[in-house]
Amino acid sequence: MAEQTLFTKIINHEIPADIRYQDDDVTVFADINPRAKVHLLVVPTKAIASINDLTDDDALLVGKLVLTAKKMAEDLGIAADGYRLIFNVGRHGGQAVPHIHLHLLGGEPLGFGGFATKAASK
Ligand code: AMP
Image 1 (cartoon, rainbow, N blue to C red):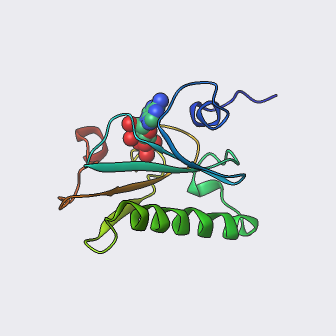
Image 2: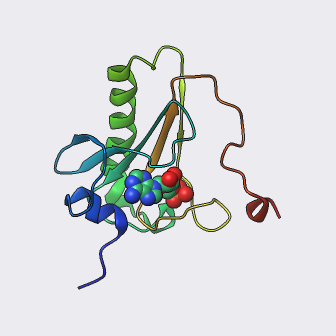
């Protein structure tokens, strides 16, 4: 069996996380290193490594990730003021965990480029 990703372990409650929502397809938990007042990760149960690995069969799932993020923003009361949704992809995109995840950032005005690193900007 392939080795589980860090996020699969969180989804399976094998390691602790601040889980805010969970159903069969998706889990939402707080980012351990928040870059904004609200910083949640919306993660599919299906451990797809990156956006590069999506197929047409995943269209509904990707839609569900976005709609789940939208609902979380509404439930948290940050939707009207706006927020940011980010998929980091691969090395240049700054993706650290090879299991697709949608960052939901908000709750305060956001600067641009909060995820930029020196290495990534070369
Ligand atoms: P990315 O750079 O797009 O792959 O984002 C990975 C995110 O996962 C980073 O923002 C990390 O802070 C976050 N992260 C890493 N480990 C954990 C964890 N155990 N629980 C919650 N978030 C985590």
